[in-house]
Image 1 (cartoon, helix red, strand yellow):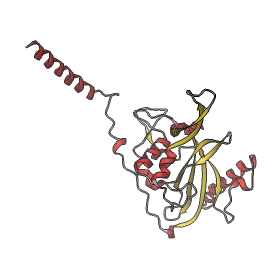
Image 2 (cartoon, helix red, strand yellow; image 1 turned 90 degrees about the vertical axis):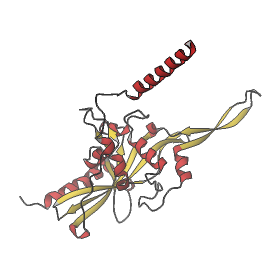
Image 3 (cartoon, helix red, strand yellow; image 1 turned 90 degrees about the horizontal axis):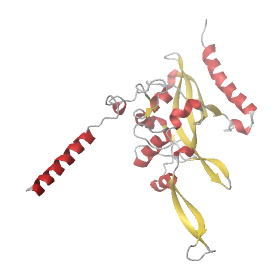
Image 4 (spheres, rainbow, N blue to C red; image 1 turned 30 degrees about the vertical axis):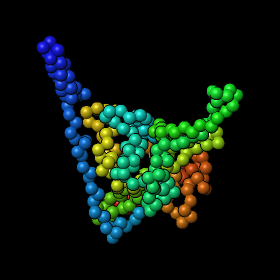
Length: 275
C-alpha cells in the first residue's frame, strides 16, 4: 500500500512539474505580432511609368555599428537570429532558393549537395599516430559553418523614377552572403550564393531584430531593408563595359567614385522639380 502511495505521489509530482514548466513565460507578455506578420506588397509598377532607372550593386559590411543588429547574435539564441542564420535556415529547409554565387540573374539553382557543402566544410588535417609515435596520419574533420565569419553581404538593387507617383524609389533584387575563409595562409572573402530578395521578404517579415532604443518595439529584417536602416557603399553600377569601380579606381578614388554615383542619383530627382 505504501509503495502504491509513493508511486502515485511521484506521478502527481511529475505531472505538476511538467505543467508548471510548460506555463513558464520568459517575459511579461506573449509575442503575437511578429510571428504572424504579413509582408507589405509592392505597389503595381508599369513599364510605362518608369521614366528612368539605374541598377546598382552595393557591399554591406556587417561589422559596421549600424549593421550590428544584422550581424549579432553570431550563435543562435531563443528569441533572435542574425541575418545569416535566418537566410541559411531558410535555404537549408527549402523555403528559400539558393542560386549559384556567380549568377546574380537567378537562373542557376544550386543542388542539395552543393548547399550541404556550404553548410559544413571538410578539412584534412595531420595528427600524430598514438600507436606509432613519430608517424603522422591523415584525418578528415567536418566543421559546421561559423556565422561569425560572414562579415559581408552584396546587394543588387534597382533605382527608378515612377512618374505616376512622382517619386524616386528603390527595390532590392538580390542578396549574397560573403564568408571569410582562409586560403593559402590568408583570409579571403568567398561568395556563397545569391538569394532572390522578393522571395525572402515573407521570411524576413517574421524575423525579429534587436532595437537598441526599445526592447518592446523590435523591428524585423524586412523593416531594416524596407526603411534602408543599414550602411553600405556602391561597388558597381550597370555600365557598357560591365566593370566594377575597382577596375578603374583604387583606394580613395574608388570611394569618391561611389559617392559620385550616389550623388548623381540624388541630383536626378532634385532636378526634376521646380521651385
